[in-house]
Length: 505
Ligand code: AHR
Image 1 (cartoon, helix red, strand yellow):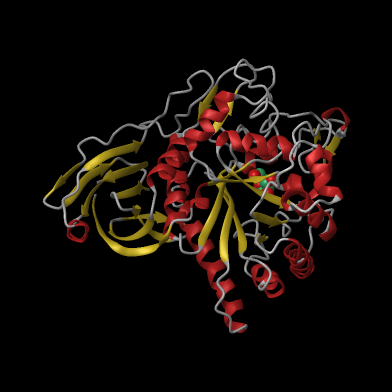
Image 2 (cartoon, protein in one colour; image 1 turned 45 degrees about the horizontal axis):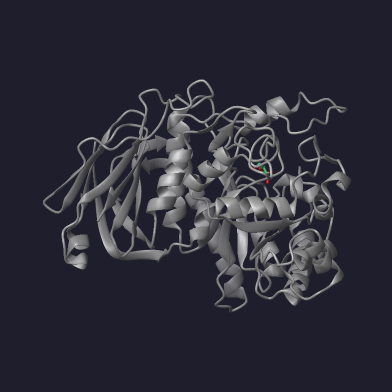
């Protein structure tokens, strides 16, 4: 099929907040232990962190990293993770039916973040704990005035504050599986008084209220409205969480998953703005899309039932999804969708980072490798600089049982002083798309011609192909064949089920 893309660099959506390329590290499975931390590993540094993993995290290009959960945080006592390692308690992690050794806590994680060059975003426990414990943690992390807590921090080796800017007020409190789950009214009141208390201590922090853990939650929409009615003046962000997977082998339906994310974002923006309208407020609540990915949740639910009541393993293999070429194309489309909403999605966290539904996998004592999803993330994070720019697309459609006829091609552009990047996805399982991208307006705004400086294509004839321990480089990206600028138009062909990025300068 043929498609046309109109690109006017003045069609600005917003300046891109680097926090859009955030990650998420939870105490879960082999994420921390035997993932980022493996003291016996040949590549381990003096603190026990795998340097091969550090190098891959840097290459991935993640900005802010949300920590320590996830479901885990709703039963977590942050004090367990500080102080002398030998006196830290072993605890049962009810969320994932595992034993938490607390070998890694705030100090160690902050040190690892310095090594990977990312910022910390902390979640507080509003499941089994409340306002006081959240304030205690904030004081411990951010205060420079001498107090019992800050003395303790110094004694634990960190005299300087950690200066954590972004804070999540709990995690997925709408989910019945969440420890301390409550209704929107109860959560909204708790989040509001916790936020007020935290701001009394440090007014410079940015706060995220829990939105829905999915657009299909029965309370979706009402939850956001009620929570924001309580917290509107207290928070900066409301969170969105979304995971997608292929169901019943229907790759075509799976390939339009980004339409769900788009509707999700637009519904939450509408709800937040309706709360603002009723208050006659100009304040705009932003979205922190602080969990998003492809996740084969149904596989995990089947596997989870195999844990016996007395089985509380340390760092078991949990949620170790292996991603295919198809998964990476859907994933690339989700990134395009986040950029298309860069005016309101000011922060996002890929869930997660290492071993657990992750772009990076490791084997104990063995190698670390890139999953298929690594490539769209690292390339988008590196090339999507400056402003997000809306493009107009004329393309064929693909059928969807949920969304009707959906554009076959999806795309977004970004522009900075040096040039422009275009990100595209072909959602068809059967048809290649030959795209003509009009550069006339771009060259007239820039006052010069542009040329392709780099291009990347993610596509595999076998859409189920994946990178594994045995074949860690089975799927990668390659330059687009025959991408060229002719008469002020960029011409390229996207094979079925493919994702691409092109840089023009
Ligand atoms: O990322 C895995 C889990 O998904 C998180 O712990 C939870 O917040 C969500 O349900």
